[in-house]
Amino acid sequence: MSRYGKEHKQATRQRIIETAGRRFKRDGIDGSGVSTLMADAGLTNGAFYAHFASKDDLVATAVADQLRAQYANVIEQAAPGIAGLEQIVRWYLSPQHRDSPDDGCPSAALLDEIGRCADETKQAYTDGVLAIIDGIAARLAPTDPRSVHTKTLSVYAMMVGTLQLSRALADRRLSDELLDEGIRNALTLLGVQESH
Image (cartoon, rainbow, N blue to C red; front, side):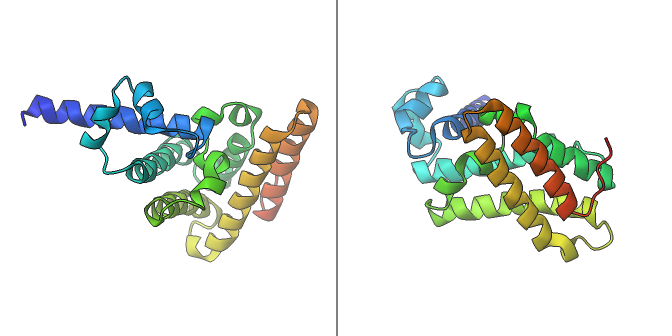
């Protein structure tokens, strides 16, 4: 295969991964068939198996990619220390994040389905979410992030649940209040004073 061919194949594969990640978060894993996923990427069904061994392979790859993007776009962009920790919590529980599930956290959009996925997807999710937890824990306890690892994971789980519930509520005001309370609760559990 020529260099152009390899680069083109890699770019096509990445386009499939990115469009599948958005589709999964919008319609769910089970609700997203291969033909729809390929159409989203501007390709035919026949091209799928040139890039992935199975739908499970694509799901695992897309979940890992979504979590890597969240790490790069949120965790790496946040300030160091407590200020960064507050930035992360406030972004995660923001109305903008609530209102943009296609571009948001795969945990809040897909956690129930990931729990029913193949081990490959669960492992990809575990690896990706633990990288996010490590980035948060490093801001909470820079000298010993492992000491707050489980606490951080628990607060993250609470934030995911808060975001999920805020998306499900029909009452916009109540949803906004829930996000605000979630921010206060997360910061309190992490031992952070709000900076307003």
